Amino acid sequence: MNPQNFTRRRFLQTAGIAGAMTGFTASDTFANRTNEIPETEKDLTFLFQGDSITDGNRGRNNDPNHIMGHGYAFSIASRIGADFPQAGFSFYNRGISGNKVPDLEKRWQEDTLNLKPDVLSLLVGINDVAAVVEKNPSAKDLSEFEEGYRKLLTMSKQANPDILFVLGIPFVFPVGARKENWEWWKSETLARTEIVRKIANDFDAIIVDFAQVFEQAADLAPIDYWIWDGIHPTVFGHELMAREWIKQVSSSLTFMKNYSYF
Image (cartoon, rainbow, N blue to C red; front, side, top):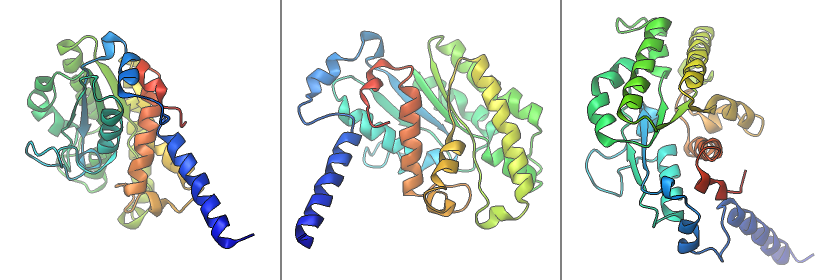
């Protein structure tokens, strides 16, 4: 076989896979995509909240080039926004590096309620764990973590009874500095995972199990390929998060069922 032909064939195969992963074919039109969106799902406001993983070094002004950061929130917004430009969707990222549940409480009115989200995606908890492991005076116990987390969702539900909650499972892996006191990191994170799951059930929220996604991905490449320091994802890790988010949320938003690469 001619090596050039083999390379070209492999390229075309790969391109075909990449094309399928977009969820649409070249024959799709923006109008057709928009027509598939129920009236109740048009003009939705999506808000991503949390800590540094969500923050993604986002801009702090209205510059649209940087406003969503460079993490999973960016990937989700860019994909949906490009595929449904006529749907009137709005996307906001209000993650702030280092935030714990109490920090979110302090800014919830301005950075969440005032934005009137229809879909609220929340990933928080690992800094709450870090405060415990590092014996920070700001550390809260599990009951305080749960109380604060519930308060955030309760306030949001009161502001918008129809809001859709998307709750991310916090995660940590034994990479870099996280190897020290690893069992402590692990146990505290798992304890908060159970709390988030319980809250999700009570608020009829969608769960996005990022931890499980990375555990599965570790069978394909070392975990530090996906999570470079045990907490923060790499570019590839953020892409996995975006795919899983879309997969899970598509169970509740009709228009997202068009994504067919899962």
